Image 1 (spheres, rainbow, N blue to C red):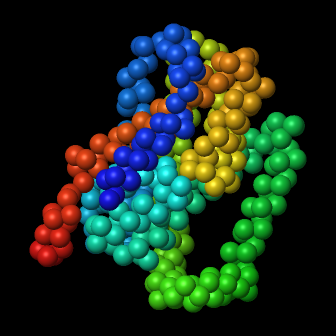
Image 2 (cartoon, rainbow, N blue to C red):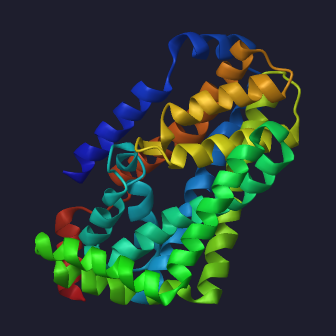
Image 3 (cartoon, one colour):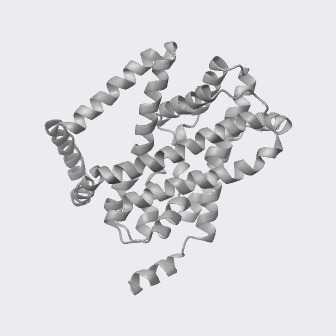
Length: 307
């Protein structure tokens, strides 16, 4: 079942992110001296995020770090499906980690990226005058979230709403187990380690975008390229579509065309090629991990019996 969803996720991702005309234009302009980077960078990207997830899961699970990292990577392609983030928890459940335990790390894993993008994106938005209005809105959202989570009264109110919802669907016990796994995420040492690997993973994405622009023999403006990655991805996180499909691409093309010397066509080619390397390649490597490294159901059962 998980293998089938992994394959479906990879096919859907290819359908969404591959544009035949833009890829042909990229093929004609592409400097093949950089092809090695585009094979290696997604490995680091996926590896950094998998290691970060293993750190988040370590305090509440006895599963080995290598198994957790393999499981995380194996769920990468399926996570590109609608609601696919739940595949992380499903993969951990297969390794013997209950969903109610792994759901906290799964949410924290995603929240770490959103926090970094939000903080960096705010700084970049204030830098560009035409984006300062959006920056004020994002600042208000950040302050609101801090207030809700930081004040005990509002935090208890949110928890009570979640308990009422869980009671209606008969999931009270699982929700309580989830609440018991959340406090450890507030550990400052764990938070620091999580954000360190989050920064590294996102730096790989920025480096990927720089390498794409360089490979197409276009001018490299590091500041503008960083903003072109952070701001559209931040907006894409607000989209219900996996990986912000459509929102990120439109935002990147518009930003690159407006803030750099690229034409709209050049910006479109850069965006498509970047999304292939940054989204599809990790999904492909994840699918390979699932096929080659992920233990079969029988092997997982044998390990559980042995333990």
